[in-house]
Image (cartoon, rainbow, N blue to C red):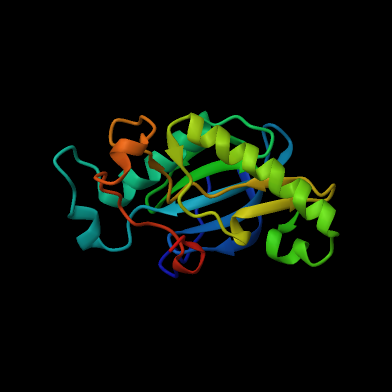
Length: 196
């Protein structure tokens, strides 16, 4: 994801540092100068080249813009104590920005080696409740992996990154057992963490 070279933020936000880079986005730590708090901003790439900018669908949106908007819409609707809170969003020429809760900590990969088995089980239970909540909303996260679980300084886990999220059915309803065999599912996520 090296196509966003310059990190472009609205004047309201002061860039602090880059937190990470994924397949389609950068995440930066910034200060919201109006609300006087640190936030994490996921910059979702919506355009990489002039050719891509002109390749639009019938409704005038590029595929990357539609996918980014879907992620932003879902993240802003979800409210759970173990899901990173989304506060706001904005668009620039090259990216859509999802303004989120900044978690002072690290991802599960870094954190998992420093805690007891009991603490790990408690964290998994909290994450299971967050995943259940997402399913109750009619969605599947689509990319649960250690890098998408942040752990704060108090050891509390937070699920993040809804870029691979999809409705459980095309109508948004939960897939019933009798529908599951014939239901077509778009494969999305990180192969190393997908169920066989």
